[in-house]
Image (cartoon, rainbow, N blue to C red; front, side, top):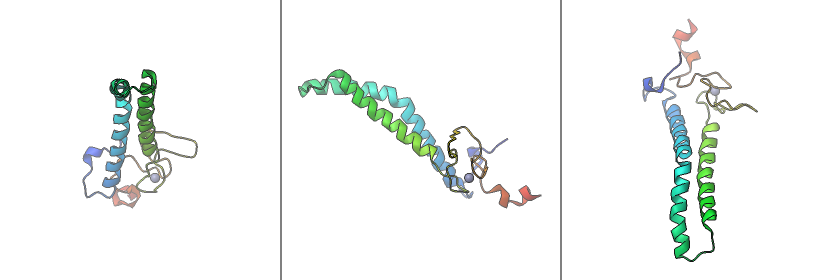
Length: 128
Ligand SMILES: [Zn+2]
């Protein structure tokens, strides 16, 4: 059984790092889940604007531009979560040379468990 974020306190050594990881993960999911609706809404807003300005940009191009921007947001937020650094070893937590494992529950390099409040190797109860 691993650690859970709910049990962390602000005075724990790695609390700030885990909070940052959760923020990056939340941003990625918000970007991913809002990608399609944002594209549709942006395209629907761009079409009347394109007509009002008597622009030559066709409707499909307006949707394509909105889709590229939305997909770019997904790619950027996902990349930021992918390269997020482990609070213990400061190397990418989920990324190894050619292996990306976003659902791992421990660091790919130092094996720090996900949401560990501090370095377990430094604790007396782990050495016993
Ligand atoms: Zn690590």
